[in-house]
Image (cartoon, rainbow, N blue to C red; front, side, top):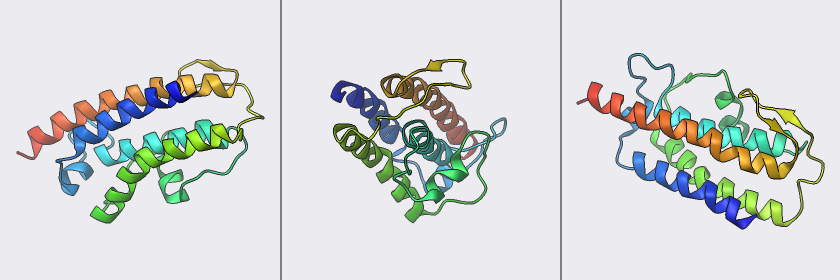
Length: 156
């Protein structure tokens, strides 16, 4: 499983580097033609991992609910995320994967039920859920790159 964790950490590090020089205003800006912003996407990736790994396994999430429920599928940004909250989201972006690795080593995910993703992927085990995470996070990495280009163009 450590290889799977590295496959998740690599793109998350790439995403953090992609947004590291953006202002809080840029991270919160919703460009024309989009329905969310950069910081929502980062928090959504955290929320998605919590749902896919913990909630579906019948386990409690390992983040405060304010970084989970408001960023679930079919949500959109509701409030301006200030600098302190941005810093927490960025810290959770990697620390949640470290916690996941620890929880895997502690065999927490023993009763993982099968489910079908909204993208019509059958996920039959926790190992398949871990394999699904890079797909979901890759989609959002693409959104983040497009959002960044649009934000920089609009706020120049």
